[in-house]
Amino acid sequence: MVDLRSLSAADMLAGLTDADLQKLGAIAEERQTAPGEQLLKRGDTAESLYLIRDGRFALTIAIVAAGHQTEVPIEEKGRGDMLGWSALVEPRTSIYTAVCTLPGSVIVIPRDAFLVLAASDAGLGYRFMINLCRLIKSRASTLQALWIEEVEQSMSRVKYWLNRGPRSDSAAGRNG
Image (cartoon, rainbow, N blue to C red; front, side):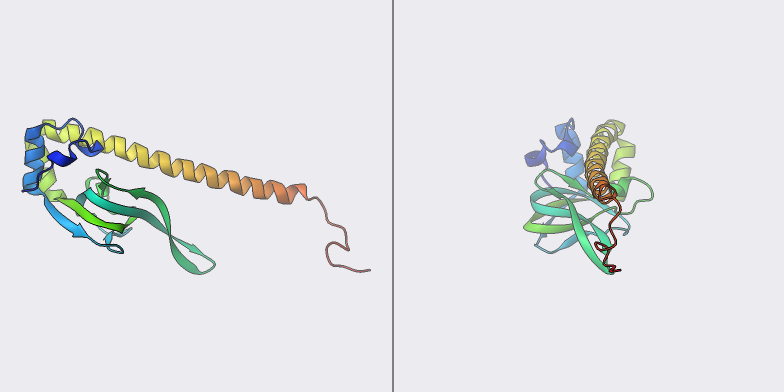
């Protein structure tokens, strides 16, 4: 049994009653995390929800550039934040990789146990899913902002090259 009262201010637990928190705590377990530990891997089946009790996690996406793959950080998450919500959304695969950057602990809520609990307590399930919708909207807004920033930078580079105009033969390296 995990005591979730200390995290009752977490966005994902907003609106849940003490009885709801007790029910969630009964199906959850606490797990310690260490820097460099990969909690989620993009593309893997999402089996659990993770509520961060302590520590920090970087959410990353693998990008291939110049033939090399690198993990690009998208966001950092800490105390009270939820990871692994993809476990509740088809096709139930992680869309980010989550790597521990500061040691701490997470509360692990197994997907199947949560779905049984939500089906048996519609009020708890409803309140939790409303919070999940807010989380998804927040993550989508973050990605949209990053995408818009990248498009604006790309457009600036295109405008720069277009405004350079035609180059003279000598500027192009041709000597006549």
